[in-house]
Length: 68
Image (cartoon, rainbow, N blue to C red; front, side):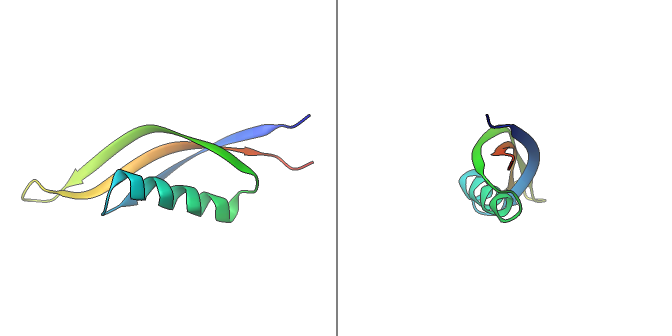
């Protein structure tokens, strides 16, 4: 039997939501072992003073399997 756990992270990028997602997952894999899935449950953008997108952010829930 395996037991999984979920942790929530927020990641950002100046390039795209996709890049923010990839950076977040890559960072999670440095700390967590047995990462199995991610659920993107929120996205947001930050705007600069001219109204242009300056940052993309994603909030995700990462599922990983606990070791025996």
